[in-house]
Length: 170
Ligand code: IDP
Ligand code: MG
Image 1 (cartoon, rainbow, N blue to C red):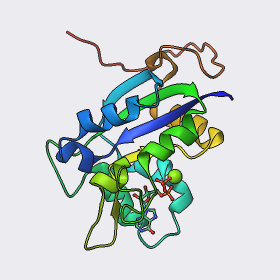
Image 2: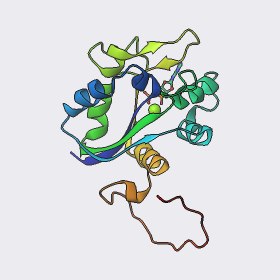
Image 3: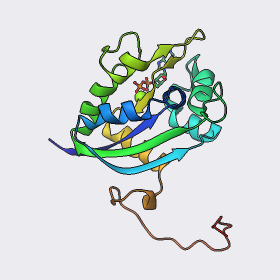
Image 4: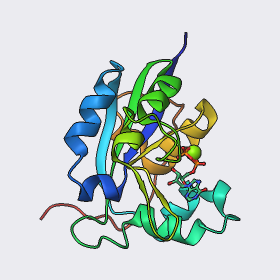
């Protein structure tokens, strides 16, 4: 058994349906720990980078709109992003999340219980769950900065950035 990290996203349909609590409760059955958490307004660039492997699919445009929450608008056009860590985390969390197609997913899984297929054919399946360790590392580095995670899970380095505009509290 290996300790793994993975990225979980509560997608905009999960936010819209007010399912955050239900989803986190369900995921907690796996006894993993959360080592990073934040709300993210997803840019087109981030959405396309996250789903780059699906860029040739016919549903790619709709998928990018979906993860950006375009069809829901304010205040649902965002996702909640989590980094979880634990023994065999990926396999165990994907089991709780359920199959990609919500109609084929175990009805007791998150996607089976709460997902739907839209009339446009997008699988609105409520959560994203990394599929393997390589993808998890790529996704976690895409969504989180090293300082946003309470543990150093991947090697880091220090760089000095000069004259970079930064927003701070007034
Ligand atoms: P996964 O989320 O279970 O890892 P992926 O194949 O990585 O599944 O697909 C990413 C997301 O793209 C899915 O979660 C779902 O929202 C959407 N998607 C995948 N396959 C289809 C499809 O055949 N039709 C419509 N949407 C799909
Ligand atoms: Mg995937």
